[in-house]
Image (tube, rainbow, N blue to C red):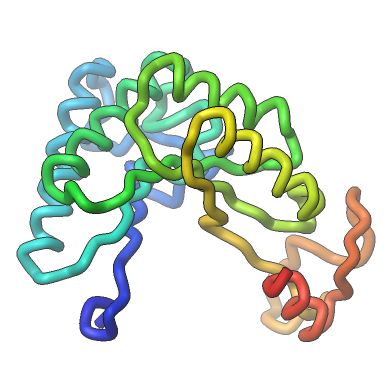
Length: 207
């Protein structure tokens, strides 16, 4: 449907059996017990096969994200040399199957500027082939827009990469409207300039 409406698709590989985030970067069950070299081969083959199926179906792939919120961990690996090896395997598959698509890497917690600096340095040091440094931005936890712009501009200018916000949301109410525990509420550790109202939400997304 995206292609039929002249839209490109962003394919986001989590490389996990469940949603991957900074606290959850578990190795898929099928890859458990593999060495990092075997994982890299499996990740390359999996990425390649998935993208080939999409291309064969006529999907216009504009960007491929290698991992989701990989803050120094991926597929159960927690050391940067191994994480970079996995990222590079995914990137290689994208370059082969979708040479016109952008390759993105994705991190969270831009409020920790030193962490983003280290992510950029490690990607560069280990020679990860990518085009876009993507960030999540949940204002309730992730600091100000000014800080976000500063840390992403630093990455862009230092390493000559594109940057983007891959995830964002903001509350329009603090009421419990779904009988499920709310993850945010009035107060919080960081003072925000946007009220929890429909207009406050709209202002944040627009800004």
